[in-house]
Image (cartoon, rainbow, N blue to C red; front, top):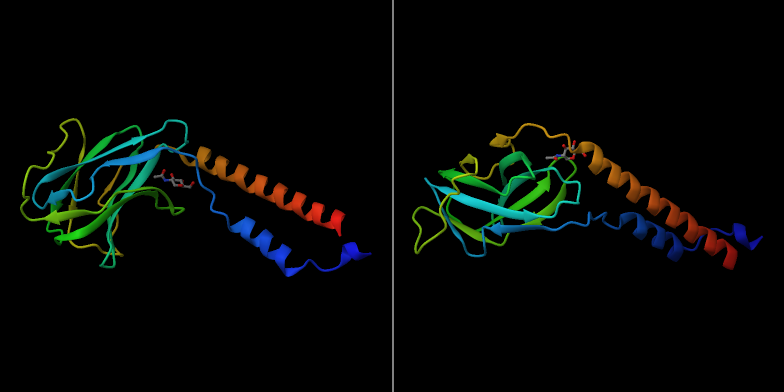
Length: 190
Ligand SMILES: *[C@@H]1O[C@H](CO)[C@@H](O)[C@H](O)[C@H]1NC(C)=O
């Protein structure tokens, strides 16, 4: 009859913790430009470059830019095809600062794939900085980070939704089964 005793709080909290474990997608996704301390210039095209693995079901992603010390987000580009390896960003009147960073993510469900190191936006660069990449598309980004703004550029949809959702479905099922097994084990051993 002991088996019907209410679950102790510690076991309940273990289940809750399991449910809250972030569902990470195993993936290699590395932002190669901007590097740490890179200076990007207003009134010029600046190269963003990345490398990613092929087997992660990510076929497109969204690019956002934020600052560490200032609220707000610059929505740079939406649904960038993952088969691209670079984009140029042409900045217009973006406030200067040395605490910018870039996030590659899925804006819809909020999963972040990669975060760049901190870089600067300046009105004139000092030293040599990499120039735009001729074969890559150029996206214009203007003004200050703004939470109500929309993405500067949207690339055509690529239909990545099904496989990403599929992966998540699997993760949830696995988690549910594991919780069930843990609960069963607990009942057997009391
Ligand atoms: C983000 O995920 C949603 C839902 O899975 C999907 O419909 C959308 O296409 C994804 N966004 C990108 C940029 O791939």
